[in-house]
Image 1 (cartoon, rainbow, N blue to C red):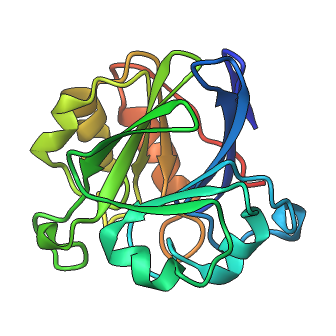
Image 2: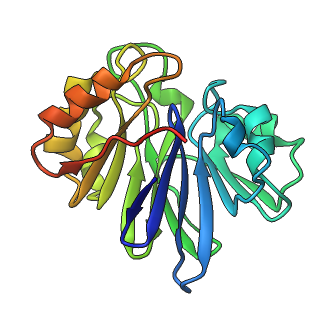
Amino acid sequence: MLDYDEIEFHWIGHDGFRIVGSNKDNAKKTIYIDPFQLTKKQHSKNDADILLISHNHYDHLSLDDLKQVISQKTSIIAAKECIEQLKELDVKEVKGVEPGDKLNIQNIPIQIVAAYNINKKFHPKADGKVGYVLTLNNHLIYHTGDTDIIPEMSSVSPDIAFVPVSGTYVMTAEEAARAINEFIKPKHLAIPMHYGSIIGTEKDAERFAGLVKICNTKILERE
């Protein structure tokens, strides 16, 4: 776990995170992003105030894992292509989003950013898969989703960014470092993701960290 300015960042594997921070009213909120293959330690928490889903692939939209974190108080925000699969869940609300949308969910501002491949076929731009920018404790946190280097990254200017580093389906470690150094330019911190489950290893994360020059990096331990 990383405690950064009273925000807790828990890496729960692959592209998945559990983030605990404060909304604009200084109320504590627990946000999950893309939970997948949760460890037993993460089972039956059912503590999600907000759940963000970047796209409809099984390693990002896993109903078995979602059921471990949601409750009737949970707001689910997901790319529109996910909505049909989420209808069975007993939650507060389900909202479909697309790139360019701006929301305020439980008094947390959330911007929706495009996420897509430019030189491979796994995440076409036409699908409307997404990344998220949320504001907690007055910090902008950018989860890029599954993506290559794309122009939309330059519009965010976050404090903290999570980027995939495994290659094959997403950016390589080298491409992810270039995305951070030249496009995203986080003010404080870059955190690698998308390794250790389906594809990619900690060596990819380490290579990425060694190539980032514009900000600090942190490789989180899976919880």
